[in-house]
Image (tube, rainbow, N blue to C red; front, side, top):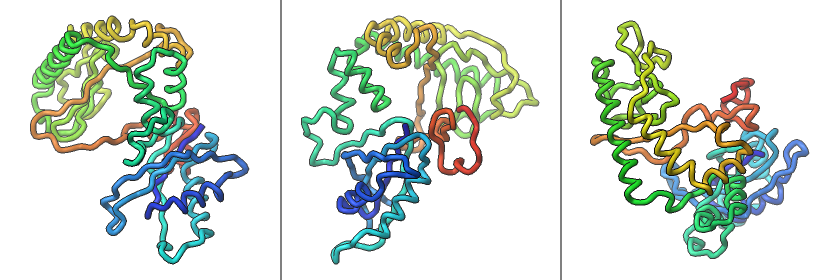
Length: 313
């Protein structure tokens, strides 16, 4: 399937209803508009402080560009009232091969509807019914696991993470003495810079290689010469996750049912994103190759739609 998150300016439930009635198919492929909606501030649009957020689902043969074109065409047939503006715009905010949940607008935050927006996800964490959990993941692509670790276990995990961070920066100082960590951009198998004083560190032993100090290597070359080293914290972190998380009966059973695979067949990464003092503010966002999508995933980025994207990201 395919889901697109649309932002409409200025916000209007009338035009949203109009789109639901007018944009029902694309190339004879049916569309399904979600009944949920939300709002978001738009600081870039002066005079239009709010954006109406809605989602539409369709077959994976549909692209964001197809939906955007259909919506813009429907705008031209909308009957404006005297009070309404005649200059509506629509942007694709996100796309995914699964439904995108929307946070209910303020008046609905206290709603008792368990199937509404984030409520479906947050309420699922309080059930022991595996069928409900599996259905939540299959529908929304996410599930919150509540109270999985005890306080002492969290402290143990925190100690492992802090040691891993300290050890990695010591290794960077030894093997990359000219690298200005926190300022320079770099990308190694084990650690990458996100922005100023922000990093992404892999914690499991699936990627246990430390870059050697070769003057001919580029700092940001992910294929730099490496020496295979399994650090103690990598072993301990992997063991911790396997013992306290993946060995949990509900977690392992849910994962296997959702992915239709045994635990031995499932690959996973353990990583931590952390900031040091002086890091610039960064809001939640999506990045990385996976947002480009691919043909085998059933969705792809608008910018790559005309480039015959055949990558299997």
